[in-house]
Figure 1 (cartoon, rainbow, N blue to C red):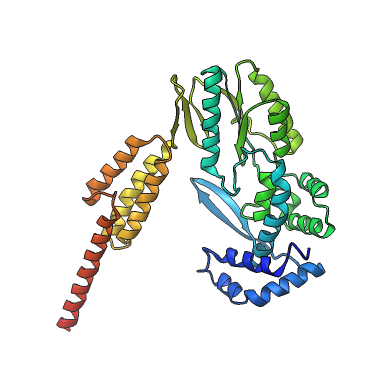
Figure 2 (spheres, rainbow, N blue to C red):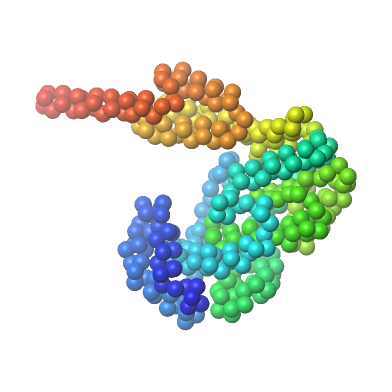
Length: 370
């Protein structure tokens, strides 16, 4: 406990927790007393008298899906960040497969897509378009997590009694004693490693190439393997790991047909090229955003610099996929509405300067009239 929760580590973690949220009043108070507050919290951790505060519950609408978020107080986030970075991840990472790419350093959403693309190319060189892929999705992955499964993993891996008791106390703060809350860093680390037993069995025992991004799983099935057998093994191992697969999203798709993984459409062509298409709803959503940006600029509710940032974000997302035509159409729509190209930031800065000069002229006229 003394080595993990050292003062210097807690202080640096507290500084990191403030990044991006310094506009909050609670964060400003926390950072103002960070030097002395860190010493108080460290003493409580070593003495065993540290107590977690209640979670702050709110909901987010992410890509049209409502997600309940349980966020801890920033004082608890400071302690949980140190515990996650120095205890959980060093213990869990050696047992994870390389293709487990969610919320890990150097990995992420596009890493999982890149690994799947490499697996498809490797499969095509050996078998062509024969075979297929098994897709699966965890049903209520976070809310249905079994605490006993996590307690057992703590007893097996965390040998220090103080650190094990602290990890168990994090679980006991969860209301209802079932599931893991979204927005908590130890919860994220626990759920990343949750299906590791199933991953290792499919990779080492069944010799199946695959991976997953949080609760989205995929396994490539060669033509000499039975897809129904692979689906049966997948369901059995998921049950042993303590989570349930969604029956509507767990299926086998042959490579001669397109399939979706993490809301990305993959197409394995006859020449072996892997075509990635973005979510079809993203393009229509971007067109609506551009029209809304035009109205906000005319009403004076948005600056040209913000318009450039929004437009650049839309195009940068589509550039990760084979969406050249849709990018051209978005740029064409922007030119029709605004009258200039969106490819160079100087066009936006020039208009920002014009708006400022016009505002200064109007102020001078008003003062002269008075």
